[in-house]
Amino acid sequence: LQHLLTIEGLPAATLRHILDTASSFLNVAEREVKKVPLLQGKAIFNLFFEPSTRTRTTFEIAAKKLSADVINLNVGASSTSKGETLLDTVDNLAAMQADMFIVRHSQSGAPHLIARHVAPHIHVVNAGDGRHAHPTQGLLDMFTIRHYKQDLTSLRVAIVGDMLHSRVARSQIHALTTLGVPEVRVIAPKTLIPACAERMGVQIYHDMAKGLKDVDVIIMLRLQNERMRGALLPSAQEYFKYYGLTTEKLALARPDAIVMHPGPMNRGVEIESSVADGVQSVILSQVTFGIAVRMAVMSILMGSGAGSKQ
Ligand code: CP
Image (tube, rainbow, N blue to C red; front, side, top):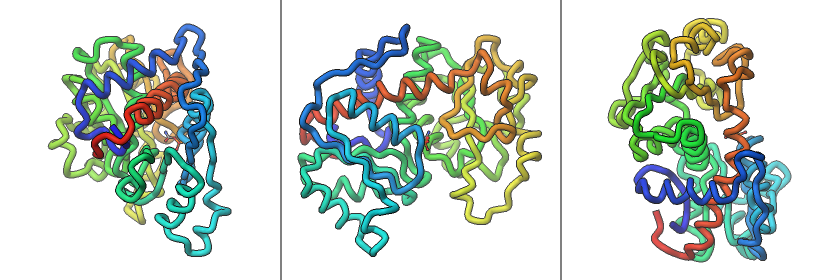
């Protein structure tokens, strides 16, 4: 791999290699991520053209744990506001000896554009583009599921909520199906399920009571209001009534089911606080594991040099 732009099309062996490498960076019992000198002298640029709390910060921590130098472009205070194009910005940062760009952008395909444009020694990681893909989130979610459930090939996983606008759901579904999870369900109103859902190999449910029955893993999604562009939305109260995860609805899943959420959460809209903070929630573990998974991605890309582009 030279770049990580999407999980779609990556072989299971590559996904497992990333997860196994992430394990090597993490002392799970202590929740401690090791500091290693693997990327000493490398310059990693965080280019976040959309807001982020978890992804931007954990990429920065991961790069520092790998002993790299990290530069966070303050997009709001950058010359993009004076009309500089994305690729001119990238060219100028490349001239500052960049080795890797971590890119989040509201436009699907922006990281691919950069990957096609940069010199072969520079690596690009997609940190979330439009509604298209969020590969490191998909990978850290697989790491979390594997940590709590070990064998993925016997699981029922339910993804609940706004799949239509969710890059996270797309990456999760590609990862889950590639890693052999036999039953992936999507539970959502008809208006929030994309036409491609069935082609992606998921089972579609509109009723939480049926969709949550006997699942091992529940992944809650937020309503992606910023990508809905004036669509007719249910009110938060209506949405919570039908699709919010409550203690009562959680009881429909297997008793040892785990509850996940990529964040940011909207409490009282897609998830009740008693569930988000409850014993079955692994939401904050996802965040910690994200550091190790991002370390794995960056070190593997840097170690592989200029191989085949996706
Ligand atoms: N899960 C996720 O992408 O969160 P942030 O938007 O805070 O990075």
